[in-house]
Length: 451
Image (tube, rainbow, N blue to C red):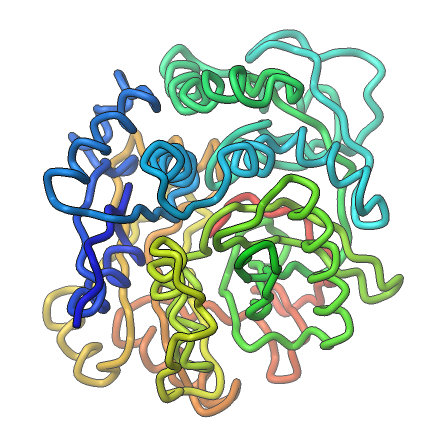
């Protein structure tokens, strides 16, 4: 028998597929808009969080929805928390969402509860586009205090690089302010001690390999689900693929979970899905937190489903309805190894060829279990991607295999059918090489994009 309806906020891409997969058992109704497509994203011009939540409450009553969920970083997670609070439904506490998404405040909390997993940080004392302060030691990693997909996040090696990176045109300033202001209004009321989110911040550069810890909290108990390995394109801060299960030692995974537990308890995160991005330096053993996201890493839901039979989207539905996710049945695993493969271009002038109807038909016939996402963009969107992210992500493919070697073989075959270069720049042993064959040290810069 199906459960009562769930109102899903800002539901698209992996979330849309996850909801559709579970529609028979977990019916839903959708509200929100897509930030990445026109004309839907024109609604950003007049978006107001509290007004949106008030309208969502009316929509929920009209459709008989009894719960709300969202894994949308920019607006959805906070709106879902506010709506759950308003309706008396299970949900993540509003202040816990704010504390995680305000990156500077999150660093301050982490410094109190897990300083060994933190790093030197500070607010960049300059208005958007303002003069770069003197006395900064370089290199530094600069990022917005509040942003989605880590746009405008990068390492800078000099005052000139920082100056160039923080110059914005009128349109860019408009977009930045309208993305941050809805959060700012709520944060000022509910978490004033965090300070303004209309700011950039500085962090010391990190060393090591990058990972993502996924989990959820039920009645205050932090329950880790797994760790995904995040592999970068060599000499860049751009994701090449996300692999599961992780190669990270279980002892290190347990230490990462302990850091997450201390932080989440400190900010009052007692219900909901979360993910923690972090670095692990193999030479020193140090774990360094990148950030906490108070939501599901929806891009990884399919990976856990293939290998463990765990459906993160079903966990989200269960939590929204106050059902213990531990009571959910697992599905039969279909793969021993899986990955989300990211296809991207680093040459703004190079034309990206998207697969034809015939190519996609051949791909789907050969790999019926695969997921394929395409991201065509116009010239203006490409220009913004290269300025803000320094690359263009034009496609994503999800595949499973019996083991890592089989997975690589399947990826190379699938990529050939699509006409795209396979996102593998390593030898079978895992040593990373550049496209010219030169060895690349596995010291990764900070990520420039979050899943």
